[in-house]
Image 1: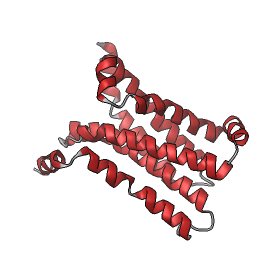
Image 2: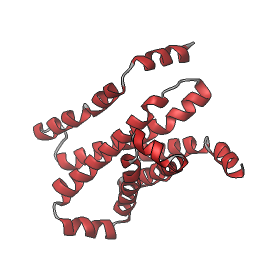
Image 3: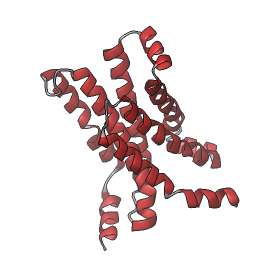
Image 4: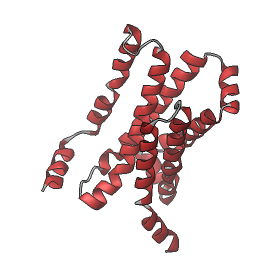
Length: 200
């Protein structure tokens, strides 16, 4: 079966390789920004690309459980790495915006307060911080069942991030809507299990 072959290959892939491969776009994008490969507004393009990759990684993370449940493809051992990588890209997205684009702390604070789409994006980032800090074996052991409940924050984070993308996009853009639809579909797959847990 295809799922068995994928699982066999996945078992041989070290987690550190996922980090290295997934971070390759960072130096590539920085090089493109320096050499004109990102167009006339390289900072804005860099900011956009980093945020988009972060959202894609959030979606990949949400796909891992359904893949195991419905297709028998077990990539659970990579889920933590995918989550940490999503946080890294969000952090880089935030740093490019704050340091290279806005440039002053006063303007950063003003934008977070005055611009709702930035407020939503910042809220998603803040919710990701405890998940990134607890994405280690020691936290899993220390927090016990609380760890699993804490990481349910992934769901509102995914929705906030996709709304942030839709809101900042100028005019009607299909791509952000596709991301939101995929996220809502992936979350809908979890509803029966969540209802069952609450009822138990």
